[in-house]
Amino acid sequence: NAGVTQTPKFRVLKTGQSMTLLCAQDMNHEYMYWYRQDPGMGLRLIHYSVGEGTTAKGEVPDGYNVSRLKKQNFLLGLESAAPSQTSVYFCASSYGGQGNTEAFFGQGTRLTVV
Amino acid sequence: AQSVTQPDIHITVSEGASLELRCNYSYGATPYLFWYVQSPGQGLQLLLKYFSGDTLVQGIKGFEAEFKRSQSSFNLRKPSVHWSDAAEYFCAVGSGGGADGLTFGKGTHLIIQP
Image 1 (tube, rainbow over the protein chains, first blue to last red):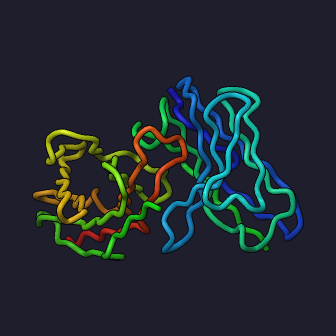
Image 2 (image 1 turned 60 degrees about the vertical axis):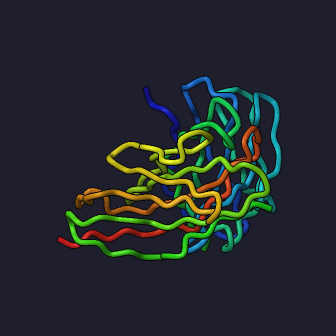
């Protein structure tokens, strides 16, 4: 059972480039989330999804887009990367809302924008 | 808006000694509280959670936490730490049935001295 898998694990981008981070879960969870983790900031919610075909903004959505075309996948896109988006990105999924249900996290994607 | 404060950025404890990590929250209603652990290079793993009932909750790896409503606290404890407990610990608050993710504290980095 793979749980939550994120690809890639590491990436270096030049300012202005675009990329997509993929999150896949095999637990049939309805809810999926994208967080970013910055030193001294904890985790902050970027976007989330409550089911296939749905997305919603979190605390820090600017500069990111997401899509949930299939229940098991949640994509995070950066259309024009900026140095401020250098961070570690975590995907999570949960059976119910993350406010009262255990969330399962991927191992993270370390993104550097130069 | 809900918030979580972890007053200690770093804590150093000798192996075999007891541990207490502090967490204070701000939330208007009954909080749903979580402690997650992040080992180096890994995603987050749930240690324990409090939703209701007994205010002392037991988690994995020998951890426990006590919910004190009067102090708005949810401190994490362990009677005797092991070198493998060295990690980053995050306290988080959820909004119950809400789907909009968790609010995390900034984390406490635990260092274990031999």
